[in-house]
Length: 287
Image (cartoon, rainbow, N blue to C red; front, side):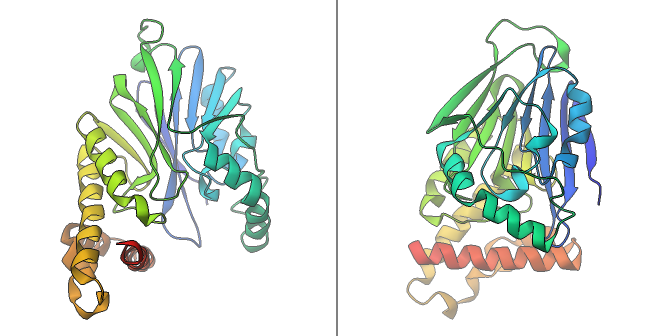
């Protein structure tokens, strides 16, 4: 199934493709500047990058992976990036697991990952990384070095997760550190720091592009922070008998998120209920 290209203004775009058979959809982002382009997450296959490639043209292109999950990094072959940047743990995951994951997906869902290949990052970082960019949004020239993309390690969804923060534009390309309606927690030991970092960014963000779900404003960050802290609170209240009280249910823990899920398709409702139950189990196991 084909995805949807959306222009957000002045050279910023998203491409959203359904994850048929897996639940929901996933977002890739593109910032087109006069002399270069920045792509954050290349999705599932090279064909997912066709629309971006047409917009990029001959511009020098930098690709960023927010993490190594397959739905965020298998379309790079559809571009000709000058460099690919990711956290050092992302490079490790792709080196150790990338090809076996792709082989398994090719057997189960060949159309989804048609033509995909594992393209390893050639530049890695540990905590933060600054990408200088030329120009600025809406094509108005800026001073050299005035426009940057800041990559910030934010483990929690996965240990290698990062976000791409463009301070001058107020844009946060969040990968799966922010999702609509709520994120999936894989590395629960980092959940408190994750929530704190998101809350701090939320004070200056004007536009949020989540890894999954609709482009939004800072309220989505606030909702994700509330959900993460709600998980921590529920876990502490229920230790050591977590299933003896009802406040681990999504309806009790976060009625707003439960209401948003109730408006989704039945398959997506089932998907996010499963995600929440798994989140609870993982948080309970470490708090």
